[in-house]
Length: 498
Image 1 (cartoon, helix red, strand yellow):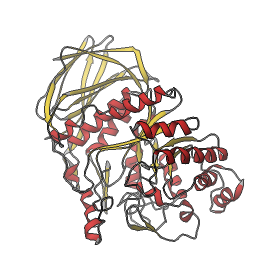
Image 2 (image 1 turned 135 degrees about the vertical axis):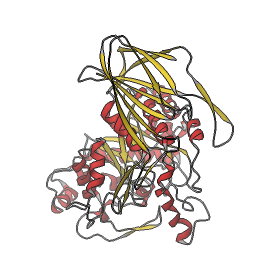
Image 3 (image 1 turned 90 degrees about the horizontal axis):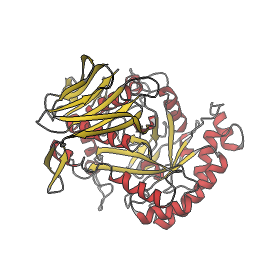
Image 4 (image 1 turned 120 degrees about the vertical axis):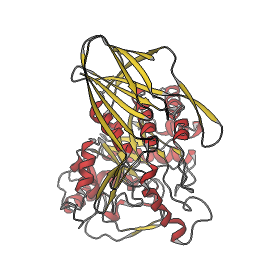
């Protein structure tokens, strides 16, 4: 049995609510035939699916990144506002976009959800001036033709978009309009200057990764203008072949799950920018999206080779307790790094690999949705010190790319609340088949509630008319001195001490 000790007085940091953010891209069924379906029986007067909105509200989405993703690198926002809209050919994903969902519809969606909009700009085929025109359209009251255009489009008050990102993954060969590190530093500098000259109150991020040369060029040129540095990561890579990692292979990915944060933190500290610039982990998921023959050459020619296969993302049996356990471990890690990570965006919120799946008659809440439900609605917002007495149980699991990894079987995070007394502990048991028992001494008596997310097996999943994964709430009564809890195999748990 592992004994844990929590010191609420030793504060690691206060978590930004934006750690539980999400992402929406014009890919497959995320926007069209997803959250935006005008004329559908379940849609409201503005064309938004009310069942999806209700699910999004329950997990209190704090910030929603849009419109991409790779999509944004050939997206010109001016074509998707106003009454005169024409379809565009999306060169990134090689489909036609009707342009019926644009900036105004996106901001309206955010207002319905009560979340912050976060716009990612076109730094592929776009220009610095185009980015600053977008800020003008959204944020200026009346000055200039773009603010006046917004007013003419029926939006008298500014959209007041605070968060903006310059580019997506412009370091990658797959991104249309990719840049060298030298080109990137100069483009971000001039874009940031123009954007902040329109509205000095915005907060800016720019595409980065763990490459030292890329980040040095970016930060040397643009560090004075940035509030954020953006990083992305997917672990179970499946762009070409839809071959999901097994449960055990997914647990291998939890080894050093925060390596990107540590590496970028070091660069920021070395450049004395760690007090100014925070990390936005603004695109993450265990499993990458499946889109064969669009980033690899030769490109697919027939739609059956590159478009139809994207429907494999809709197979709900892929999203098992492995996804839930991995996601909980990721969120635990980001909470522990809350001093430098201020935002994270699960990619995406709906369909593809999202935590919500929509179909014609309703929605399915995948296993990852319930992780956000637990963390958002049960965990505290202040991360506090936790240490163990005794040896952490470990397990050896195969890695998808070969070999084996020894990983901790448990991942535990302790939090308190800034607005009320009490404590909430996230306790993840990664083991596929072994229960683990933990003991926690209590300094004061408390009412204990255990929330357990699990299924009848490590491969349990949710689907239409199939509920294999759910949260079970158990009242454990009042404990005065210590608390002993057995954690089920392949489970995500939150222990509330009120």
